[in-house]
Amino acid sequence: MITIRRATKNYETPAGVFPALRGVDLDVAEGELVALVGKSGSGKSTLLNLAAGIDRPSSGTVTVCGTSVEGMSEARLAAWRGRTVGFVFQFFQLMPTLTSAENVCLPMDFCGAVPPRERRGRALELLARVGVADQADKLPASLSGGQQQRVAIARALANDPRVLLADEPTGNLDSATAREVLDLFRAAASAGTTVLIATHERDLAGVADRTVEIADGLLVGVAASARMEADA
Image (cartoon, rainbow, N blue to C red; front, side):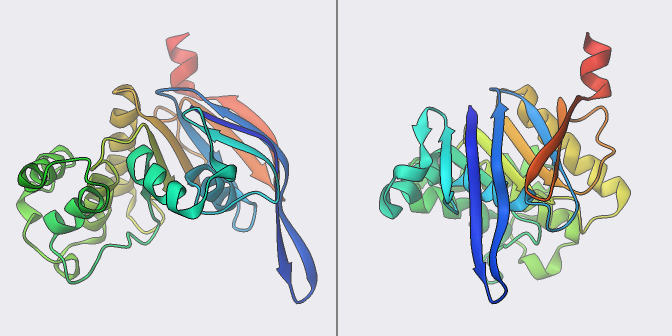
């Protein structure tokens, strides 16, 4: 579902060119949950942004669900991303003036993948799936961090994407809530969604199928999780 080949990404800085990624190869299969682990500045968020089509590689190729992402126009890319990829941001990025249900409806409004009369019903169904149906008509400011992240996950699932990407989705949550959120990603992968999570947390045993370590823009290690070893 995700195939990245020889991907590089360079950024111009006052000190010169900064190589955020340096010839990365990565494959993520359908229904697989992969944790991309690394310190701040290691390149994991950049790699996630390439997979989402939010950014483009300086060189190399990015193919998601059979589509070459780096070659599309911005207009085509936006339409493709809305229907194919769900993205969960570290700081939730919910619209503050919209209720939880309205936030979940936004991707449906933009893409038109769900008929207008069915959108609120689907939003309520998704909010129930992530355990915050009772927060449907509340504004983000009245929700806890864990509740906001659950709404963000529901929003990412609004158009039934084949790929779900998450950037540090538990970084602002307490340990118990973080585990509950990770379990939601596990459930999505078990249902067939391809999930790639960028995180600095290494202890994802029992949730991820594989852990891929990145450092200084290079993949430096790949390991099957305890969950996969137990299944084997």
